[in-house]
Image (cartoon, rainbow, N blue to C red; front, top):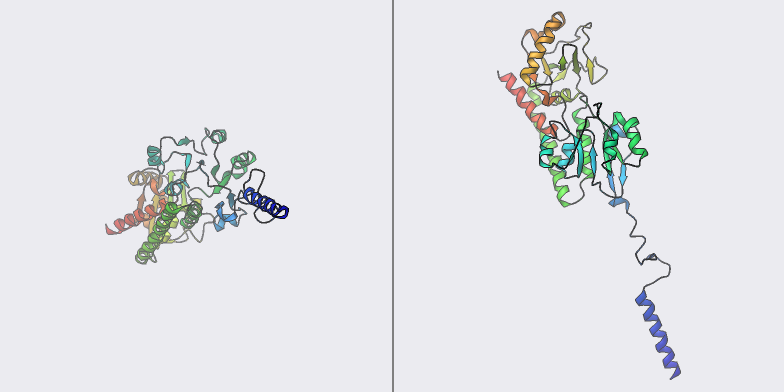
Amino acid sequence: MKKFIAFLLAAMMLLSMAACGNTGTGDDITGDNGTNTENTQTPEDTKFTLTYPASMAAQGYEPLVLDETPTRIACTATAPVPTLYAMGASIIAMPSSSATGHIFAENPNITQLKSLMSDEFNIEDVVALNPDLVILASSYKDSHGATLESLGINVYYQASGHGVSYETVKEESMCLIEAFSIDTESRAKAEELKKSFTDIETTCVTLSAANAGKKIMVLQAGGVNYVYGQTSDGTLGSMMKMLGFENVSDTTAAASMFAIDYETALVDQPDLLVVVGAGDAAATETMMGEIIAANPTYWNAMTAITNGQVLYLGVEYIAVYGIGYVDALESLAEDVAAFYAE
C-alpha cells in the first residue's frame, strides 16, 4: 500500500512539473515573465532594410537596417516623395513643390518643410517632429546629416539636383520600392511601379530608332547670365538620350551640368538645340531670345539656331522625381514627336 501511495505522489509531482512548463535548459528557453527570449529577438530576414544604389554604395554608403518599418518619415527633399507615396509609406513631412502639391491636398496633416536651400530652413524643425527616418540629400551629409545622426535619428541619403540621370533615379526608386514591399498590398504596388519603368523603357527603345544619329545640345536657362549645358547624365539630357539622341557635350564636359563658356567655340554642331527654363515653354522661348541677343556672335554661330531647330520646354523637365520620370518621358516623347511633325 505504501509503495502504491508513493507511486501516486511521484506521478502527481511529474504532472505538476509538466503543467508549470519546462524551466530547464534547452532550445525552449523562457525568461522570468514566461515569454520565449528567442522570440523577442528580431530575425534578420524580418528587419526593415533600405539599401543604396550601386553608385552610392561605391562611395561607402551602407544599408540602413531597422528593427521595424518606419512610420514617421520626414523627407527634406522632394526626390523620394512620389515613390514613397505610391508605396503607401507613412510620410509626416516634406517640401512644397509642383510634385507634392496634390499630396498635400489629399493629406492636410503632413507638415510642410522649407527648402533645404532656403535661409529659413532649420534642422530643429525636423527634429521636433520626432521622425523615425529622415531622407536627406547626400550633399548635406556632413552638416544636417551629422546633426541628425548625433541625436540618434535614422538618416537615409539620396542624390539630388538637376544633374541626376534616369538610371540613378530609377535605382534610388527601386531601393525604396523593395524596402517598403512589406505586405501583400505593398508588394502588388511594387510590381505595378516596376512594370511602369519597364514599359517606358520599351517605348523609348522603339522611339529611339527614329532619332538615331541626331545630335543635340541641352541647355538649362535661368537668364542671360545663367545658362548651363547638360550632358547625357543630366536630368533632361538622360531622357533625350533614352529617346535616341546623341549629346554633343558628352565628349567635352567634365560634369553633368556645366556653365556655358562663351569663349570656347563648339566642337560639334548639334542638329537640335533643346532648351528648358523655369516657366512654361513660351517663357523659355522668350528668355532664350534675350540670351541670344546678349551674345549674338556665339549663339548665331550655332546652325540649330539659325535653322530654327530649337525645342523649347517648360519647367516640368528641369527636375523630375522618382517614378515621375515615367510620366515625364512619355510627355517628352510627345513633345519631340510634335516638334518634328511641324
